[in-house]
Image 1 (cartoon, rainbow, N blue to C red):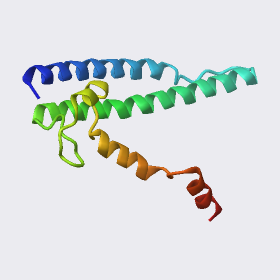
Image 2 (cartoon, one colour):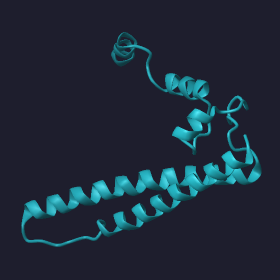
Image 3 (cartoon, rainbow, N blue to C red):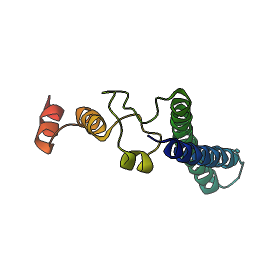
Length: 127
């Protein structure tokens, strides 16, 4: 990977980091507990808080991934699959610059995490 490409990925990751930090801060405002005499308002506020908590969790996870990718850029390990230690394609890095796996390893991991077919899923659920 060229220095120019690395510089562009660093810039992209820094932009994503700033965006995630801003989104996390704005989502925290929705966590404020509002009191209301109306039961429906309390339920709605509770659901809004749950959505905000989910958004904060997702943003925090992605922010950790982005920061780890920036660290890999600094250490010279950016663009190398952590599983097979092969180069990750530029096309994949452009799409998901914080990725830690090449497409082959990512697909293998996803396949290992889910049943292969509906029939297998049904067999598992019967046991």
